[in-house]
Image 1 (tube, rainbow over the protein chains, first blue to last red):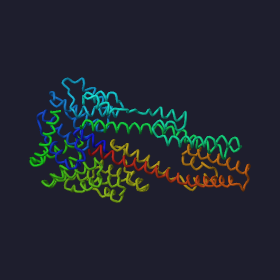
Image 2: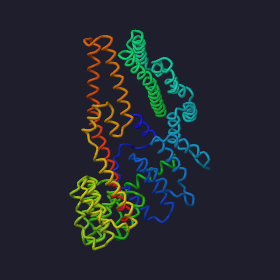
Image 3: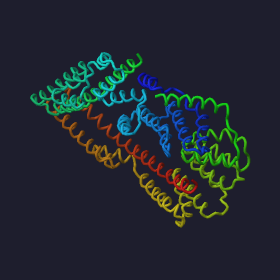
Image 4: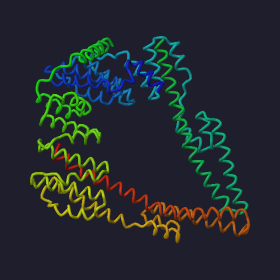
Length: 254
Length: 291
């Protein structure tokens, strides 16, 4: 929530406005759209309506409203609309869409990114875990290498698949790799004890009452542990992404 | 950036102005056309707000039209209670709108499981229109099925003529739903429990959950072997035997109870699935005929 609020503030999106409060405005704008004859006026009003939806966190409705803009006769708003679409897609969390729109925009003649879109672009690269591109774009925006290095210093992402594989080779090692050393050690201890009980049961001649329960529990911990390690790596990456996004926003504020 | 900021300023000033300079309404036709436009762009909440604001200016059939549209908008965003209240305000003087409203009221009461209120359709006068009469029978037959009142269903289904293409599929599906419900009714929780007592997992097979049945059987076999091993190796008075016999007994009883519950859950799931299907059957003709 803290990150979302910071993002909204940095991208000039007022938040926590009750949608009901702006309903009269939405109706009035739509009435004017309905009665307007000039296509440019309709486009401008639709843009205004989308902005109202955006300010009340109704991002999908904002996108739907922007889609109604016809661009007939070459709308003067085209660049603003592209920028709005990029921003809203980012705010919804459609990071792939945001990236695609940013790429498409490059090919549009006369297109110019607004400052808020530049920030959204950096944050979008961070969300997509493409830190190198994010660093390059951040460098262009702040034009101060020391600040860039400071923000992007030691941001190593964890590989969830590697965490999964490591846990298969040595139980608990995947959790340790994901940064949870204590949980990894516990997992290793429990699985070793269960494995020993299982083998010992066979040796002592208790295959059903000792080996089967111990081995059944062992396999549960073994496969479950590997899945858990993968999940922890993903969570760790999420934390890194959120932390980096906040650092970037703080740095931009300066 | 500058352009966007400028537009935001315009947006703010615009918002300020329209709050104090609300334009006047010219005619009912204009209002109606605008509401149709809101319906087309699916701006239902805006439509409801607009009606609330403007309805005071109208009476008679015009007011009925607005109440009907308010019911329709609320219905579209699943504000069921508000929708019913709006439809109820449509008066008999607007004959066609009144009939439509009553159908939607009936359906929505059925959705809320208030079947007695839904049966208000039974008293609806459709002016001897044979098509609307058959639609009424379809809706009432559906309500009977929702109540699991098969006798009433049979009575209403006698009116299914099969000669209206908008209703034929619904009528067929309702008959199939009735057959399915009758079949599902026959599963007995007690029999499932007895079967599981004789052979662990058999109750699950009876309900149709064969995967769970095999798993239960396998687990019970392993537990039986554990009990045998504990008895043979350590004797009947050993702690090992006591623990495993306790576990086996608990699992055995739990399996029987699980099978009884399985039938109950199965029946609940089946009932919910059929209820959804019946409500869909009620809803489809209303949407296709009246919208």
